[in-house]
Image 1 (cartoon, rainbow, N blue to C red):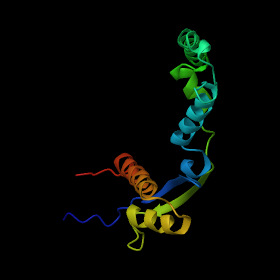
Image 2 (image 1 turned 180 degrees about the horizontal axis):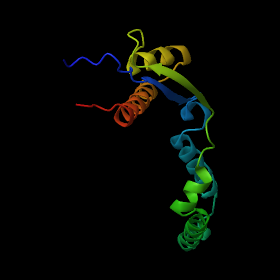
Image 3 (image 1 turned 180 degrees about the vertical axis):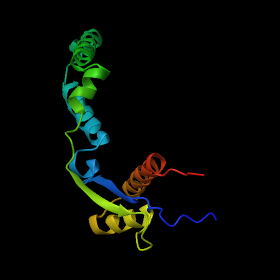
Length: 157
């Protein structure tokens, strides 16, 4: 018959790596919009306006030439001060966020083992993860389980 009484059950215990950031980059670092607003307000304060530079009627003849020259100099100085995109990425890259890391044993043969999505949802409730972080965690667990099954389960005919 087809029954194999001496067949050993396959090892279905997987070591799954759980990792997620403990804080969000939005919570710890200023938003890009805020940085841009700060830069624009600093640049706006450096540009002279009519209100900040009062002049008499005799001085108004030369003001257009002077203001053009001043604007040109300000523009050139901001061009030189603005880093290239590659340099900007180097200087604005946030430091590594602290991560929660743990390796757990996942028993695929146990009916009480939760699905990756359910486990990720429980972790999200406990640690306050966002929806995207929860889905990334579930996908990470599922990928590790899929890789284990593909590499270890062998069907013999």
